[in-house]
Length: 211
View 1: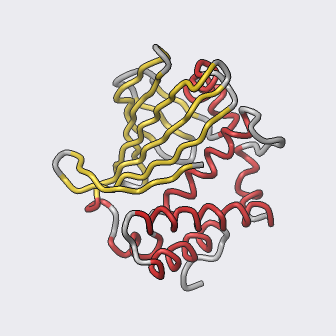
View 2 (view 1 turned 90 degrees about the vertical axis):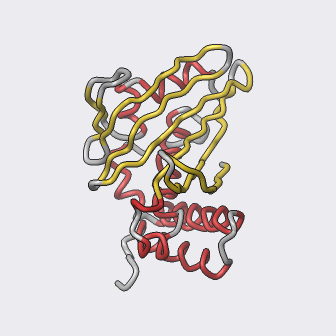
């Protein structure tokens, strides 16, 4: 798993861009189907509904909704799509890129962009990139299990219970620490990054800051 954080702009405004990527032992057509087919998305992430075409709107049950901005099926070894991610009154942007690394190997990369002004400063100061990053880690774990990278299965309806198990807590701990590493690589102070990792771990394991 590779994670990175850098700054950029969207619509001329300062933005933070988080990237998470993983390679899967499956061809690009299979990974594309797993990440665009409603029936398969429901098996590793969340049930999705809506008008699933460019310009249409999607809804993830109990989570985000948004508009499908672009969609490019596999061609010449690449594929991808871009959507808005609308949640709790805020809007950010998610881009997925697939790159074929061979007949049975594909790199999946997810880029999540949010305007600095749209995230309360106190939330970023408390959690840093782990606030959204660990959630994507959990999603990609589901995709890894679905595509057979690891043995086992966590159905979406079992995810919350699993997250509070010893195994789930160990996963959240490691993911929070790796996002702290990405934060440091982006220029954050080590003590600040460690503090945000601790807060993120607590949030994902039922122990929010101040509890």
